[in-house]
Amino acid sequence: MDTKHILEQVRDGAVSVEEAEQYFRRAPFEELGYAKLDTHRRLRSGFAEVVFCSGKADDYLVGIFQRLAAEEGEVLGTRATPAQAALVQAACPGATYDPISRLLKLEKHNKLLHGNIAVCTAGTADIAVAEEAAQTAEFFGSKVTRVYDVGVSGLHRLLANLEPIQAANCVVAVAGMEGALASVIGGLVQNPVIAVPTSVGYGASFGGVSALLTMINSCANGIATVNIDNGYGAGYLATQINRLALGAKE
Image (cartoon, rainbow, N blue to C red; front, side, top):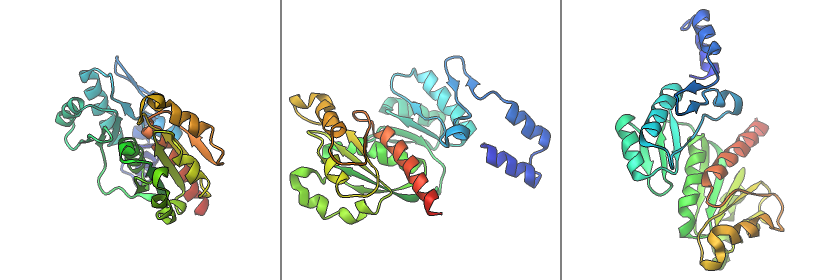
């Protein structure tokens, strides 16, 4: 339950002043022994804590999901395995798992999506990282337009899809190999571009390092680069930009 909801309930008489006082006296985190859940993160940053699933012990992961679900009503988990997803789904009915993005979500129904973020990929092999970005942004309330397989080896495909890309408040450009897509898009749009290098490529791509170096050395303006395969980070940042754009238009 967030601060605004508590205050609205006090205003409407559904929660007493004393009950609200107890809520605000709570520590800004919940101690689980093996984890300290940041229950005030949404209040500070506008986003609830997200669970990085990879490497977590099964019992820890399930416990964290259950507590965040009770606190927030929804939970986003990244880099989950199918086995982890099955355990969480058994403990948290309604949780869904996407094996492409590896996102594990317990999500509120009928969520309204706002603004517009374009998520583009150079090739089909980049879609897993792109979906991590797109679904992260959607989880946080952003509308996403997907424009996939528009890499520079067939530039006409990108040019044929410029209208929805140029209309977006922010563009996420996901590419492996040499990573040129972000530079090309950066020269064609007026709004920020978030470049996401992927580990797709042959030996000299060095697991995405070649694409990373291309993107951070881009001659196009307005491009920021996140880490290799970090679709989640791109989706989070894109949502922040989208929210700022929506605020400026109000």
